[in-house]
Image (cartoon, rainbow, N blue to C red; front, side, top):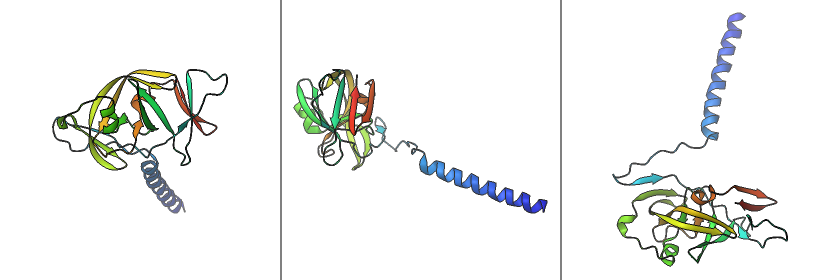
Length: 186
């Protein structure tokens, strides 16, 4: 009887360990694996599908250090940012590592890039691509200004809309959803 109980315990323990290992690998965020990239190039992790919102007018008494963005009809959070007086339409994407600009938006900002500048390998929902890293002096979202933001400029056709990613969002005091609206706080 003791042997049966001990062997049953061993089987249950083994199954539990295997299941726990399987679930932790299935539920844990995927480990970032550097891609094989030629010398002088750097890889960045993929950005998940975008989360988008449409800006809403501040309610009376709203704090000027707060911007609320209502979702569009698809549930995405879309807004406009101001970079050097140029308005750029963006998708707020907490899964994007960088503020990522379409090449057309970079052109409108006067950012001139050579083909050799696109030396960073990216992985997005649309697949892999190349990007150029740039530095923006300031980005304004409503009443909130963020100084010194690193951004990536994607090759032509790589993005349908620029992404407001974590290189800007992580510099804010808070990013959360309340009553279905995305709230950005200084």
